[in-house]
Structure formats: C-alpha cells, structure tokens
Length: 636
Image 1 (tube, rainbow, N blue to C red):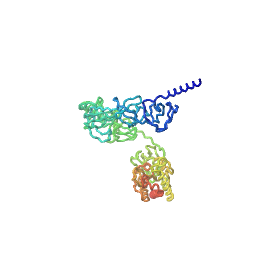
Image 2: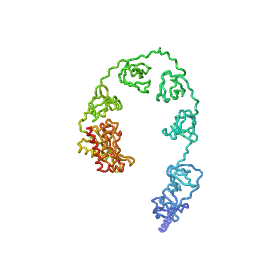
Image 3: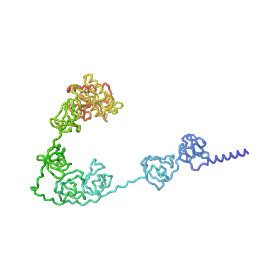
Image 4: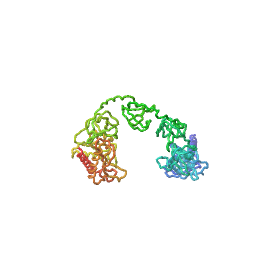
C-alpha cells in the first residue's frame, strides 16, 4: 500500500513540474548573455535556479516584461534578467504608416526597435530634429525613418508649430519716421519717411513694427505709424490765445513747455482731436489745449494811454526766491534773491508778480513776497570751531557750498575758524564780513601739528580678501606690502623721518578708510604703492600718478615726478611709462599732497622677474624713498 502511494506522489510531482515549464513559444529573438547568467523557473529572483549560462552564450528569448525575458532551453521556457541579454538581430520593421504628424524632438532622443525602454537602440536623434510620427500607446509613438517604423518615448516629441505669417496692415506715418535694419534706435538709419505717407506694415512686438517696401523690410518704432487710411490734409485756422498760452512738446501738460505766448497772440492751428490742437510756428509744430484758442482775430486792445500802470509795492522776499523770465517755474532761473531782500514789485496776475530791479523786470510767485519792511534777520551764533588742515598749502574760501563756486580768499594751514553749520560737506564761516564756505574734508576738530618734521604716510594697496592683480601664486597685495615695509625702514634708518603705514599686515581697507587713516595720522604727504596688470602681456613698465583735481595738485605733481625719476634711474631694465594724471580715489580725495605708484605689470614676463626678486624690490623701495626724501627737503 505504501509503495503505491509513493508512486502516485512521484507521478503528481512530475506533472506539476511539467506544468510550470510550458513548451517553447513560436515567436523568439536571438540574443547573447553579457554576464554569467542565472536561468530560473519563474520571473523572480526567488525562482528555482535551473542553470547558469556563461557570458557570451547564444540564446533564444522572448520579452516577458520590463525586467525579465523568457529563455527557451531544451524545448522548455524559463526566465532570466532582461538587462543581461543583448539582442543579436533587430526584429523586422514595417512600412511607414500613412497617417502621421510632424513633430520636433525636445531632447536627444533614443529611437528603439520596439516600444520598450530596454529594447535595442536603432539611432539617437538630436534635440530639435523634425520627425514623422503617429500614436502607439499612452507612452510610446511610432517614428517613421527611411520607410521603416521604430519607436520612441512620447514625452520627448512635441508637435511642430508653424509660425503664422505676420498680418500686414495699411497705415500712414503720423510724423517723420526713421527706418532701421534692427530693432535698435542706436543702429544706423537706413532711410527716412516724412509724415503723412501711406505705408504697409505689421506688428513685430510691443514697441516695434516691420515696414515693407517692395522686397525689402525695415524696422521702426510703432508710435510713428497710425493704422488705417491717411486722412485728408488738415484744415488750418486763424485764431488767438485767450489766455497766456503754453505750447507743449507732446499732448500732455506734464511734458516740456517749448514756448509761452502772451494773451491775445494770433496763432495758426488745426484740430488734432477733441481736446488738443496743433499750433504752427514757421516750420515748427507744438501742442496746446484747444480750449486755449479762440477762432478769429484777437480783440482790439484799448489805447495804451488808458491802461493804468500797475501799482508798485515795496516789500521783501519772505524766503530765498527765484526770479524767472516767464511766468512758469520750469523756465530758466535768471536771478536768486536771499530771504529778507527788499524788492519793488507789482501784480501780474492772480499767481505771479513782476519784480523791478533797475530797468530790468522778472517774474516770481506772489506768495514768495510780503509787502512792507523786512524784519531784521536773526543774528546767527557759531555752532563750533574747526582748524584748517592743509599742510604746506592753503584752503580756499568759497562763495557757496560748492567746489565750483567763486573763491573769496584762502586760509593758512592750522587756522582756527568759527563755523555756522555744515551744508553739502562745507562749513559756513564768516570771512571779511560776509558768508563764506570751506570744505569740511580739509578741517580738524583739534589744532594740527605745525612742526617742521614731515609725517609720511605709505599705503600698500589691496590686502585681505582683495588680492589685487594675480599671476599664479604671486599676489599684488603681497608684493606692495613688502616694498612698502622696505621703504619705511629705509626712510627711518637713513633720514629719521616719521613714517606711518595705513596697513602693516594682510588686512582689507576700503579706499575711504585709507584716506581717513592718512588724515587721522596728520600726514604731510601720502604715497600709495601698487602693481599693474593688463590683458596683453606686451604692457610693461613703471608709472606714477597724481590727481589734477585735488587741492594739492601742484605739490602732488612734484612728489610724483621725484618718485618716478628715482625709480627709472634705479630700475634701468624697466620701461619708463612716465608721470600721469588720474582721479584715483586715494589721491583725489586726500587732504595732503599724494601720489600713486605702479611698480610694474604683474602680467608682463619682463616685469614679473623684478616683482618676484628680493633684490629688485629693495631697489624699488629705496627709489620710492629717495623720491619722497627729495620732496621733503624741498617743502619741509
């Protein structure tokens, strides 16, 4: 009995095992294993391992899903990982379908032999390639190439958009227009079309239109073209200004006033629209509100003998007032009167008065004038004391708080003055019984040193996070700090001069901080050291700068010349680029004679040899120091 049961069990096991291994399918592909490949009983890594095929084994297979292929061995079907079987031959392609669309690839796109991401790649089309395609399913499309059908991911093909032809319109020029080859008004003008000419055009963008002339096209700003049919010639009318009439540049009362016509001035005009008219003045045209023009001849004025002269009033300016040549504040200011100035004036209209000065007359708003005697101006009290700080030079006293105003006189270095407040960087002072102004940048709260020993301020350019010019491992900030320290040591040891450095370590200072440090150190002269750089390796040599705009330009020029002369003598192998003017911040805004030295080009193969050499740096430092000493001996 037990023996019979055992036989039944064996038969059932064979039947079940055979059921799991169906017969070989008829549709197969040829492939080759790319690794030693496990063949399993089911499409799962937990399936029974049937065998392992060595790398390079030729196999018959069919597609099961994205991850597994069916493998046919000994008339049985098993499963293996799809990624390790390489197709040997491409399946037969079909003829291009008739119903297709034109598209453009949106990325570099793989074209495959079947609609599967692991299928063999037939070719790769570059982004922007135009293709014929048709839907295949929700994810794939059929792509037709050379009469054959292939497959590609649907997401990376976009329908080709055919740009619509620009819509041409008929219009006319509403002013003289300029035609350009590009949408840029700074480009050359190709030709000009006068106003009131019919043109064919199309809109290019929000600002520009395309003008068509025969087979040629040009660009012009759209504002110069009006769509539609050219209207008949305008009808000009004679009339007159029924008030003081402003003529504007554009149809906007906020635009520039080009001219002002007195009341009853005859004008020739034409209607532009319901609100505005065009006024013709010779070949010029302007705009004015239509309501300001009355058609016909101006009224006859009564005899001048019957018009009483406006009563003149004695009064004063109740503020600093502007006097104009016309009754609008956008006209030029002809004269400015200080507050409390006595004036003679008469009423012009409800808002303006005429100010009489000798035989001249001006206009000013009536609200700026008060009848009667001006009150006594309150006596201003000094707000503090300052000392002028211009070592070896004098400080200009100016008529207003501006460096371009008239010079009233000069104050010597170290002069104490009372000031009456700060305006635009200038202290107001009293000078020879009148108001004057001195630059606050050349003053100190305490009395500056008047000793004959010069204080020399040396400034090593750049530093910290600012390396300056760079060539490999050589930084401008390192070179100039080294030369600066050598010059300091030389001046101290040989001449016993007082030498101060804006920086003695690798720290970053702003340009203004360097100027303020020199001022706080009470320096008598300032020298800033730098190394140059250029895009061309041919640029080379030494040059020294001073500012012709500073208060000490004359002495700064002497200082720069002395330094450049000594440098050229000591560095005979380097090119002399001369003494030049420049408005570099540290020499333009310093409060003492100042120079800026460029010790050579770090970008030059010749100069960099000297900039790297300790011996050359020492010669540079001594040359700069001797130039400074030559200046000090002359002025201190």
